[in-house]
Length: 241
Ligand SMILES: Nc1ncnc2c1ncn2[C@@H]1O[C@H](COP(=O)(O)OP(=O)(O)OP(=O)(O)O)[C@@H](O)[C@H]1O
Ligand SMILES: [Mg+2]
Image (cartoon, rainbow, N blue to C red):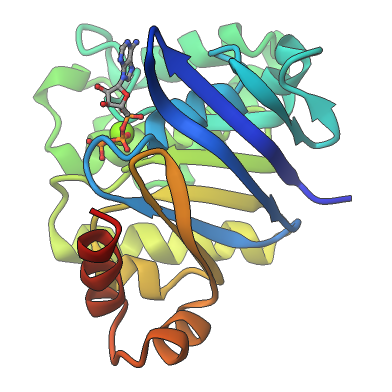
């Protein structure tokens, strides 16, 4: 069974089609890059895949659960880092972890243990009492990822997790992504950084609601006769208007 499968997944807002009948599958343990220009429909697609937004047409299955029929069941098996981190700025670092542990219904002992594990894993022990709003962006990003991992999800949706983060922090973040995937997690990630696209097992490129290319970075570079995904991306977005 694929970790994620979309079949003609569609979302309209009034007469405007933000996501236009996209279909793809993501295997377990895969790092799948979801690329596209601003407004291509990436976040809208992620919101459907995470059970937050009802499709207008088609369907998708996440860990075998239909987003149309069973959106609530999906939230238990996934971790989601939204494009604007859902952290509470006015809470302390460890209070954010407590909050998300509560949201995932973890029992008291599990919450306590997972909080300590996440603080350690993401190097946040030294700032546990700091107010979240006072953290540099790269630290907030680690806290947001840690919060999304409290309940050991097998499938992760990361919507521009490295936007605005410095190159070193981005590299470290991608090491973490690959560690998670090596441990069997499936990672569905959007990015505008083309160096990050090269780190994905497979990528899809979206334009105006449609998937215009899909394959491994190497396959796509060969198919379009380019040396970098950056060049593939630019050509595709230009040629599809
Ligand atoms: N709730 C909504 N109502 C109306 N239009 C919407 C709504 N949400 C998104 N859209 C529109 O759908 C299109 C796709 O938006 P979406 O946020 O999915 O793009 P994106 O690929 O995530 O872009 P970005 O790279 O800038 O994050 C945009 O034109 C956006 O204005
Ligand atoms: Mg977006």
